[in-house]
Amino acid sequence: MFENSYKMKNVLILLIVFLFVNESEAQIPGFSLGPKVGYNSNRFTTDFDSITSDPNGAFNVGAFVRIGKKIYFQPEVNYVIKGGELKIGGLGSQQIRLESISIPMLLGVRPINAGVFNLRFMAGPTFSFVSSKSLKPKEVLANWPIQTVDDLKESFWSFQMGGGIDLFLLTIDLRYELGVDNIYSGEDDFKLRNNLFNISIGIKLL
Image (cartoon, rainbow, N blue to C red):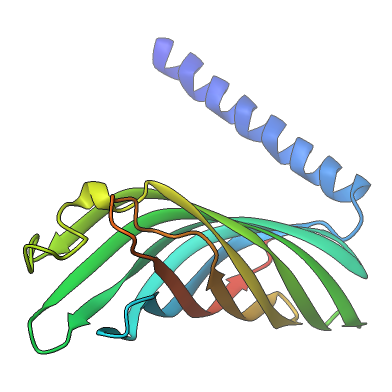
């Protein structure tokens, strides 16, 4: 009896959510939402000429909400891996890996809004909360500024800009993310920023 009551409760909750989403869709112009996956190519930049960085690639996954027609607002929640390898001349290298929850808040415009095909441009700030961070190796040189993961911030801001197309239910974006905050939080006068290109594909469920 308890199991049947539990199942009925879950069905009722799902029905309420479904009705609420459909009612919201009917009342909000240009409302759509859906899942998305993408690929990042990112590179760290520093203010030290002796330190270089190679591009690093990783996949990401998330979801988006889009509100509006000609002009629209698009918040997202994405799981993103950002990282790369810093090289210190011929003295060694260090790999940095940051797993983060990224929240872009984009404002966009559709110069072509034809229903089955849309052309879009968007830009806006992005907040990233770091859920996991690692260094390999943990130490490179005695005077190297990044000695522990505590020398990397728990959160930071960046800025995204780019364009996209919609084809029926598919939505495809190409963006560039410019690092705004210094990711380094240690005591040395050292600046570390992350910049990346991202291509993603999503499906508009509503």
